[in-house]
Length: 335
Ligand code: TXA
Ligand code: MG
Image 1: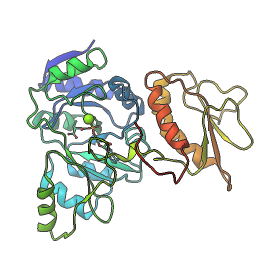
Image 2: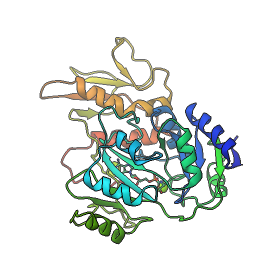
Image 3: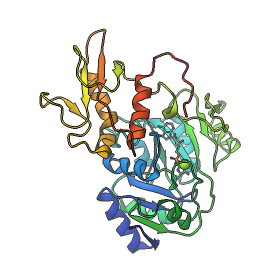
């Protein structure tokens, strides 16, 4: 059952309780409606991918109430300071390196060392973020491959029965997603055009004495949209080689299982002891990191048990295939 209720102080409190308990809430922002979950709760974030029926794990934007909170999660740079001062709150997302101890779940950032952060301007979204004691991970609240929702009815049409609550705040002002800028490196890069124009960004940087050209994302998809790093073929490859569909451990391989691992010790890794696919999604990136960290020597190898392909299992298998893809292969986007 998905409730759809007018946004108010009372419904925002209810939304906050649902989010704290690991549930899913769609809420309005000035760009489009977002499908929110506690960004620090991998299980809740797995629920987002399940509800959207996304065949792969795109990294998600973490929404926070202000720049100060943003810079506790992502490392502040000169570019980020200037752009945050000019355009937050507002339709701009900054990609920064994760801080040490950043509590956001690895699934939220799809295993990347970078985190996407946005402080929305929408008054009610601001209220929700202010009373929630957590960053909220939120992609647009539409089923995968469909148009982004700019009304609560659009959200209901696509996701009814799959999420807990829709906060109805009327139509979104912009209807166009946020501009995404990677500010983590030497020069800022425009990853996705959106609500704030390239010209406005360059003017802001120049006025602050930062004279640089705004770079473009190198990879473009068929429809001309920048391809997020999460979609590159061999993106997020551990240092160790990866063997898929392993039914047993060979030699000194580190095995990541699914379900109970027969005869294995307590320390062996299972994406989900009980064979729960959502739990497996929540554990995927942190276990790849863990397995990578314990392999040693020059011939480091990780083996991974077969993972069911239905539902969110499709996204898990997609990501595992990328992790196992030959290194240094041309890193074209896959469909
Ligand atoms: O306006 C918006 O940005 C809306 C509202 C809800 O805030 N959100 C939105 O989210 O459009 P979504 O998931 O539909 O698009 C987020 C984009 C994806 O293309 C993703 O690849 C990119 O942000 N992204 C997220 N984290 C990233 C990261 N660490 N590095 C690079 N790109 C990232
Ligand atoms: Mg979207």
